[in-house]
Image 1 (cartoon, helix red, strand yellow):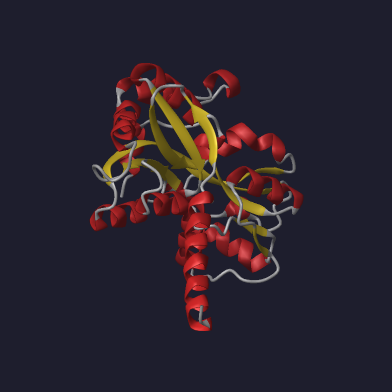
Image 2 (cartoon, helix red, strand yellow):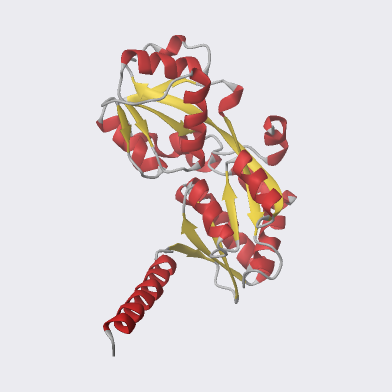
Length: 286
């Protein structure tokens, strides 16, 4: 075999290997339900905080279904749907969702609920953001004080919202004070606690996981721009194996039974719900 052919074979095998690696990177975080109808769902916090488990198990009983949850932030979830590696996603990234629908690789958008973002930080509040007039003003104060700030930096819905706020503040965050984790919400919240840093967490994670951050407290909330709406999206018809079951799940989540689960979730354990339902969320859609 000539050296040229050997090189060609080598490149081909390398590309095949890389494709295999791309597929193998998809890890199933958990399985809910034990039915024969299997579907793959990618999302972040709703899975981390246990809401997905309750929804998935209830739906599984009704539809003989089994959910495979792939843990991913909104940006990664959207990419998994685009590349047909999952059947559906739950995300909080309205502009990216609009783009996905326009491009045709996502369908059946369903508003399923909301929470909001809190800016938490050290109790001594070195940047004095308790006096902020908006999320952007709070960020400007943090940058002006060069107080430690944690960013997920992972193109998740949270990271996208964070960058939008910096843009509204007219600031490009850079410096030793700006710490990027490339990690999920709870891990980043814990890092903020360890670094005496500010962090923008969703309210659901704060209610459920604030014990990991005993040095922090809510310092700013209430800006309507910080309300966080969640959409469910499905792959186009016949594009993935579990698409029809996933569509049934989306309809279940949007139904009266599914919405009651969302509206009530967390009350028994935390004495307050972690999410608002779609009826509440609708007023914040833009």
